[in-house]
Length: 125
Image 1 (cartoon, rainbow, N blue to C red):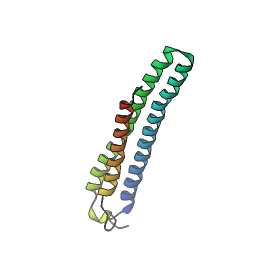
Image 2: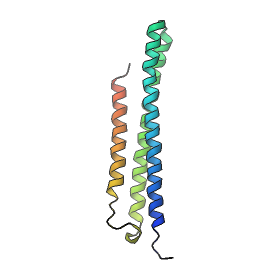
Image 3: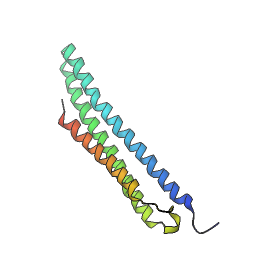
Image 4: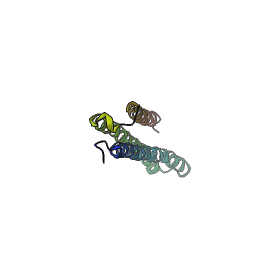
């Protein structure tokens, strides 16, 4: 076996993608929980129950928190991946590989998650 082992690089890429999937899933769950508050508002309007309206507000806050957790997950994955890839020797990287694309994709997803959290706060019921 040669000193260069491409499996290390590809394992790092798979790990980044797994963390991205996890972060996106948490962001999506946060959005769903936040929008569940709209359903609770609709129910409270029909039943005139003030307790349901209070739950709608807390649902939105909890959804925003989940979205921010997912965003932090994606951002930390990008940071860790960038740091780890920088430590690999050049011969372990595929030819003409640029680590900037993976980190850029992660940063864009993190910014989208942050924008979604701001949007959900701005449209707070």
